[in-house]
Length: 476
Image (cartoon, rainbow, N blue to C red; front, side, top):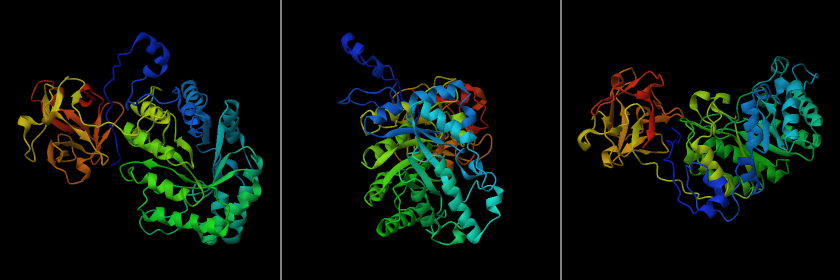
């Protein structure tokens, strides 16, 4: 599901020459969220804008990508915090028991420090990405190996890392609220506490965080289980300083507006909170702005980290989830985030509007303004009629008339695309990709003008994505 937005229209501002001279750096950006002038001077990069509120806006960095000049330039220019994507994980730093290798980790760390950025450490104890030697251990031997690993890595970076994800992803997926059944969990239910106590002894100056995913929605069992653990730790004096919310928002785990409530409730326990691995399927400008504003609204929110620079660098590149396109150009979501960090409006604009075919110049249209279920949509000359107004919802629907959804009548090439009463099925959910394609969540096929035709009355269907102009769409 998720929440995605088509690129908004270019906002033309008429300003006096003197005013333009004073604020040209701000007005040169095409805004997805148009904000009133903030009280303070707006910053032009994400890290600088976040620093105005004593927060960071960070990025996950892969050492082997730093030789890519576009990648490194964006990362240096835009972000003031760095997390090593994989280089500080267990298999990378201790490939053989007792033999530590910080070559790749130090490359990320040194690049960050040389460019004036703080560093988050990720991660010390985790059921995944364990080297083979660790996977072969169990019981007391595994427990001791975990402690030794924490000591070895934290001593190497003692006094240099601002935050450590001490334990990562220890709770089970689903609605049980149980701990994940891992080799670490089988050493005893106190393993998380032991890891935090070892980390505090290894580096008393670092903030110690617990980090997990699918814990952003306050109503979910996994969130409540994590909350109960943190509350218990605080009550008993277990050294935990912060909680990281990965925030991989996608069709299976969409953004919910109660995320702010989640952040507030954890902060009320006396811990800092952070958005640690943010990516959003489809890169909705409004959802990105909402997440940033949720952090800004909670005084103990340390900052936001996005999990990669460009879509092509993402572990979920097919979801086009980041702030920069493959070529390094900024998306509307980038401007939405920058505006939010600069103190702009917290209210995203309505997503309603016409959807125009790149190849045809004509709009997605419901023939004859019909409201009948099963009416196949078409191309038609653009106008302001309600039968051409589409609103993109947080559920990933494209709605007309308020209660009719753009609906795929099948999952194969040639399947009819029609309107139908909204009911929440995956055949009524769409992903709006940065290349302008509109992709059915259920089918993985693209919204397509039949035969590449451009005339009035051309019908719309599903078809294998080809990036042709008959499959690309813009906000008119």
